Length: 194
Image (cartoon, rainbow, N blue to C red; front, side, top):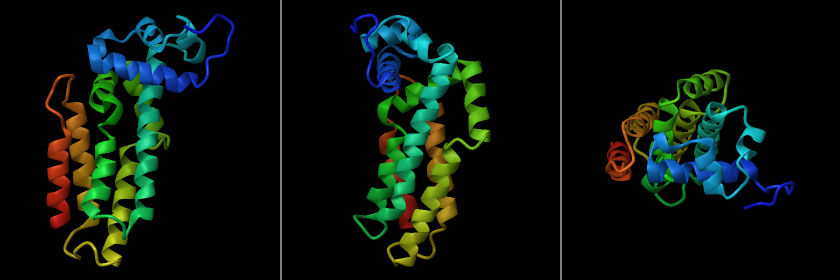
C-alpha cells in the first residue's frame, strides 16, 4: 500500500486495471470504490480524490478503453499490405474483448448514471464504436486498393458487421460466459472471404 502523502504513479491506469480485475473475477456487483482501491493496493480515498464518484469512475474507465481500441483501429491503415487482412482486422476486433471488455460493458449497463455519461461523451465526439467502424472501413478500402481484398467485399458493411457483432457480444456476455473471441474470429474470416 502506498504511504499516506506519497504520490501514486499512474493513478488512473492503476485504478482502471484494478477495477477490471475485480469485475472479471467477482462480477459487476462486486465493484465498489473500496474493492478497487484494495485491489490496487492504494489508499481508500484515492478513487474519490480523482473521480467525483463511482459512476464517473466507471464512465471514465469505459471511455478510456474505447479510446484505446479506437486508436488501435486507426493504426490499421498503416498495416495495409502487411500480414493478412484477417489477422489485422481480427486484432482490432479482439481488442474490444481484452482487459475484461465484456465484464466492463456489463458494469456500465448496471450503472445508469455511468451509461448516461458515456452516451453523452460519445455524442460529444469521444471515440467509440463509430470511430472504430470508420477506421475499419478505411483499412479495408486500402486493402482493396492494394488488391488484397476482393472488390466484391463492401468495406462499410464488413466494418458495421464487425463492430455490431462486437457490441452484441460485449452487451450480452457476463463473467463466466463462453469466450466471444472464437465467434468473432470466424465472423471476420467469413466477411473478408466475401
